[in-house]
Length: 167
Image 1 (cartoon, one colour):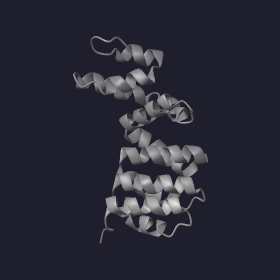
Image 2 (image 1 turned 135 degrees about the vertical axis):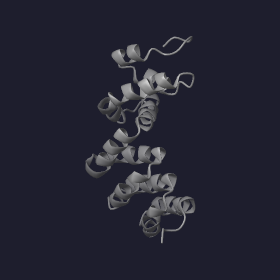
Image 3 (image 1 turned 120 degrees about the horizontal axis):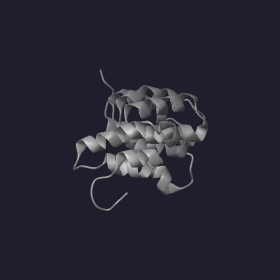
């Protein structure tokens, strides 16, 4: 991507440059160009989801950013992963759903709290806190009794963000 002028979304898409498309999706000078980049990123959803498995932190963060930019289609895939995916992918999915902050993810995240993995439960509790939807209050209250101390601590922090359950 050139340092001067707007990004060339078509070229970035043709080359499969996810990192360049993420930057283009944030291009504030031309909302139509940014929208084209978001559309192009959606076409790479499978590749971006696979990238969550990388050990390269730069690529991992770019993948997370791309999923947040993609929005609803990515959210729906991440919810599916929370329900069906490999443990590490579930952890990544829960983390990104927290960043997205979409209340649609609250119920699937609450259901996923039954997983025996304490790290996943802690990430889910943190994600529920980031989303901030009071619909998660009951699950967070139950998490205060979790056998893992890290989950309990995350639940304490999340409850402060979420507030009381809806009446």
